[in-house]
Length: 123
Ligand SMILES: [Zn+2]
Image 1 (cartoon, rainbow, N blue to C red):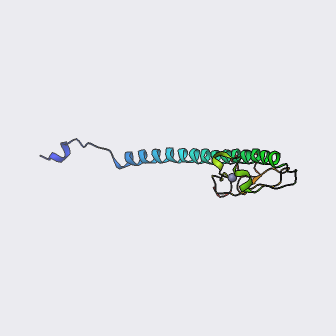
Image 2: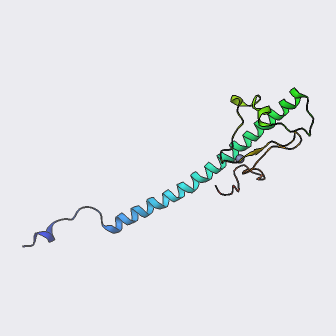
Image 3: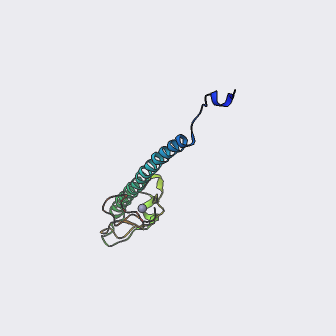
């Protein structure tokens, strides 16, 4: 009379648990790739909006101070025309170069990319 052979074993086998873990891992990797891409795109778009704000502030500074196309504003000059009187910062840690009024402001990280958020090095 062996009791162990008649007992019904409950629970999951090791293979079943491994399959579930593998599926969860696959789903996590797909989600992580998608989230990272969305974060990159959002940072690029935020940076482009900051550059637009800097360009607007440059225009206002030019009109207010009666400057020409080749004059270069400082961060202090532009702060009064920007939101919260603060110079914007790049979300990826880049630095903005204001440039003259005839040249668009650039970011050390994001400028040079045609589509915001695309081809961001080291992010
Ligand atoms: Zn940037």
